[in-house]
Image 1 (cartoon, rainbow, N blue to C red):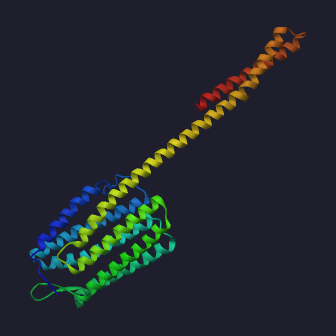
Image 2 (image 1 turned 180 degrees about the vertical axis):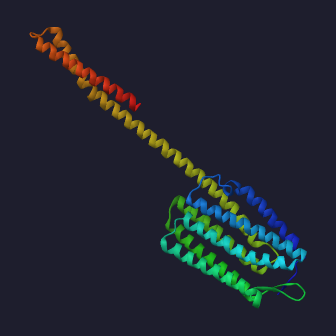
Image 3 (image 1 turned 60 degrees about the horizontal axis):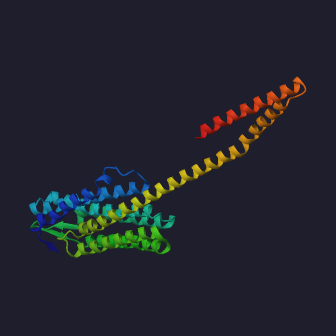
Length: 308
């Protein structure tokens, strides 16, 4: 199947535009300025993989337009590897983001390894047998049988990811279901545009699908993160309110019992002294009790000030 690359430069225009939009939407995440949780770390790796794919895809059209066959060949190899890489990185992020169970995560990991191994092996054998792609005697790019098989396996892998995500969505409630459905939509859009790329190789459908899906998903993630931050702030405010209530109850407990007891003793012995005592021993005992209870009150006041 011969492919004319008179549209090479036109093809690259969209990839360059995709890079600009990608950086504008995801600059904070790419630079690591959004805080690092486990799923954010995987999402950041996925964004770098997508950026690499856009750059390689754009260079592919430029080399095709210039007719630089060696650079074009090398970039085509990188194109297929970067395509597989960003799809696999997407699935790794999904596993963490939606907290898949042990077996779905293991199945997707093994499938990703098989997919990557197939592409690496086919591309490594390509210079010797031309099974993936080749250039004919006129320098025209030709597509071979393993190229379509590679795309078919890639779409199949994305369908498996979508199936696990949909199953997760059907078993979840509220916010978790919303997240799962958004991930499902992105995965389906990506699979559809990869299929379109097979039939119209001169149109950057994969880059277009990834850009559209990622922009919508990034907006959703930003809204979801904002909602999570608001819930976190509310939880912290609730914890502070509970701590304040606990301190208030403790204070009133001290006032009602620990302060009243020595205060009653002081008032009682003071009244006894006012009425007079017969012996000096009784007076000393009363004064000692007043002094001890006064010391206890001072200690309680210090404790309350420490709590405040």
